[in-house]
Length: 384
Image (cartoon, rainbow, N blue to C red; front, side):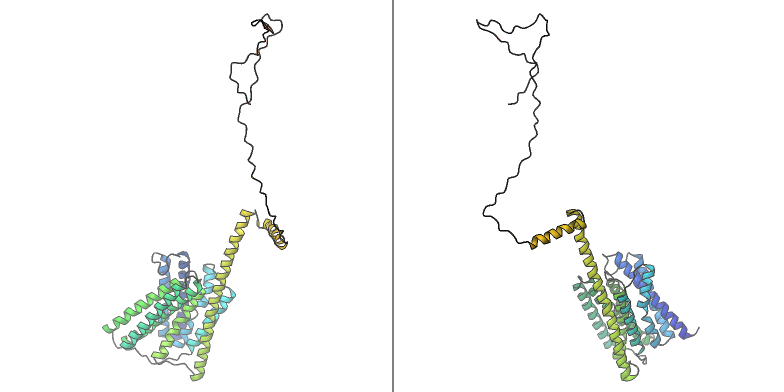
């Protein structure tokens, strides 16, 4: 296999590794809402770090074997590989708008990178390195603050954090190229600060990319990161390393057009995510209103006549109220009678023909006597 073919193969495998790492990061962010930046206790997150490291290593090897004009555009295929991989492995399907935005971003980025001409290997002096590190740190911190302020809009917050991550990764590539140029003449202790900056920027890029996937899906933050990273490196190469666009003025115009196409793809992905969030919020609100219907009226169908009756009532003219309105007082429920049933008097009856027949009357101080009926031995409650 020729070096060019091996470079192309390594570039494709690198894009697949980056896509796999992004998918794992997004799933970790979805399942760990409390861990915003670095869920260190999740093995899946370390797997994503390993996939991103593998992708970066393969990309460096591909750059060593093939031309920059071929390897860099192939690295933009990460978002194209990520969408079908996410649909196949985790069941997260992207809509037509997301696909169009991803393709626009990839085509624009590939065209822009293919128009950047190579230049001789150059390095940065100490003042330039300090200035680049300070400007990069300020931009990253400012984007982090803006993302924190936009916490109510997950899509906007995700784009801001993904942009900060892309800047960090792009500048780490710039410092890596600088150190590589310095090491061609021998390793020296003066490169230790640059190595420290590379480590800090790479770590910040990884952490910010993880935070950008929280609540924002996969396509928008990944496309933003994929576009911003090489664009920042290309801008620094043009302004500080003396790189230029190919084909003169025509190439510059084409590069600007490709940049507009890539930016349009990112905007499409962002607006698609914002529209999806709005639709999900409406669905949640609608389900909440419909959930109250069965509790109040029994069913949504039973609520329809009530709504119609309310509309008719509202349309009818309201009658004037009388001067005095008599409101009936509430009627108390009848109190159950808990008194025992009145017992009848037990009249002692003597069977017929008995000798103990009581006299109906008798002498009582010279007058007639009528004996009262004899009562039972039990107490009797007489109800008045």
